[in-house]
Image (cartoon, rainbow, N blue to C red):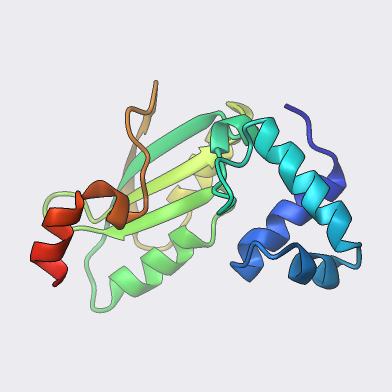
Length: 162
């Protein structure tokens, strides 16, 4: 799957705007909405975008490596905000969770190749307050559904939300 710089710019704009409208995307980056629509359709055909909501297939887009890291930090008042913010600003990091238990943070990152792994770990470890990290590599993903509504059947949703 190959993307050129225009495809990448369109994808970045889709996710920055949070709006799949070809008209709005085109206005933002200065290209015709027909071009945006055509390119988004091609990205769907290639499997880079999963559906009409333009959910990204990270692996098909070139982010083949998923790294999940446990981060232990030194306790001090407010450390979760400081350390969490620093972790979330690292390129490639998609999720940062402050945890209860033996681990302070769980961090998920999607990377294009193994060359980026050492950079990622180094960036974690230079954050003031980080004591130690333990990283794991995902071999295969069994389920990846971030939309909670898709994780329940209609009857259960009516029970818990109705």
